[in-house]
Image 1 (cartoon, rainbow, N blue to C red):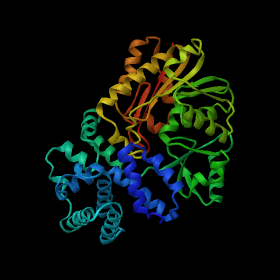
Image 2: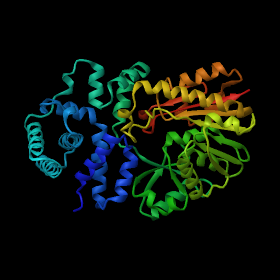
Image 3: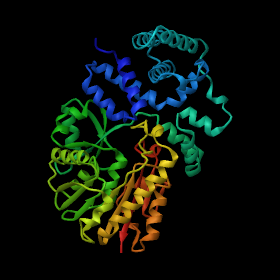
Image 4: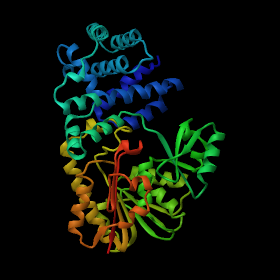
Amino acid sequence: MSKNVREVAVDVLLQIEKNQAYSNLLLNQTINKSKLDRRDIGLLTELVYGTIQRRDTLDYFLAPFVKKGIDKLEDWVKVLLRLSVYQLVYLDRIPDRAVVHEAVTIAKKRGHKGISGMVNGVLRSIGREGVPDIKNEKDPIKRLALETSHPKWLVARWVKQFGEEDTRLMCEENLVSPAVTVRVNQTKATREEVISMLEADGIAAVKGELSEDALIIKSGQVFESKAFKQGYVTAQDESSMLVGRALGANSGERVADVCAAPGGKTTHIAEQMNNEGSVLAFDLHDHKVKLIRGQAARLDLSIIDTQAADARKLAEKFEPESFDRILVDAPCSGFGVIKRKPDIKWAKKEADIKAIQSIQQAILNAVAPLLKKGGTLVYSTCTVDKDENEETVEAFLAEHPSFVKDEDLKNRLPKQVIDSKRFKSGMVTILPQDFNSDGFFISSLVKQ
């Protein structure tokens, strides 16, 4: 018997809970394998992302009704209860009785009578009594963490770094579904031409707000379109598109992208160079290097050469001053893309930040000699954490006096980014609420 959408959602959530699987990758694999109706795919996505996004809040709601404690429950029961409470509290279009009936049916199939009885009792009690009011929490950090379902340590850290108002806005924005954005391959067509192509395929798109090659998809399946398959567009968030702009590579230059997978920024650089010159793209893992090759082939970009290599050891492969420009889009905590990958906020611990920061420093130190005098080094991350961002750059500059902040960066980024309160000399932080895009950090340095 084929499984219904809620059973599939339980399976996906259970894998994420037990195996730390990435929600976005696992969900895509599940959709491709399952025989769900197209209408159910939207519901599956909503159920999985919503339940992960609201995990701690759902546990807070459940706590008074689960006598022996949520952590004592088997993983599948815990996941089923979270999924059901998410529907009861956050989804108006599904009747409560249907939610309870589905949950009890799944519990009967997976477990013994006692478990289905417990699930029934918990959900009916919540239906009668309602969930506890978070506003009763006295501690403002805990209250904000529960209201927006973020780890308390992370909220406390952000409040320290950005203040309470920006932290609240960021946490709230992280609960919003991200826009679908694509980058137009300007070696093949203009934005206007691609909008017309998409229109012919029944896809509505409008121009993006931050990057001059961005489109925001309003409706339709862009990744099934001719425009996508024939290399006219590629998936990329608008904040991420600004990294290629910050690097400012010209036709004929030799550029290195040292942490390049899956290849969004690599291919953008090649497009900006009008497919003339040389882009060397490196990543640690072979399977990730294949992703870059696949992207380059689909977009018909011939100047990209890919290799599996550790960015920290590139000096063993190349002479000093081998490159005109280098991009270090560094491994990071990923706290800028929580709305795309909600499991990130539960998977990471505060101690991880220090470990990641030491890798970032090591990569910067290793590639610095490979840049020509007068060349540009861009350091970017998809996190908002100041230790991984400004602190990492300042520490690098303190050790490398031949590098200075790039005062010309302001001429390569859009006016609204330059005018934002977070733009400083040679660097900018973009928080998710600033432009409804991903959180990002971009810094540009010049070697004297």
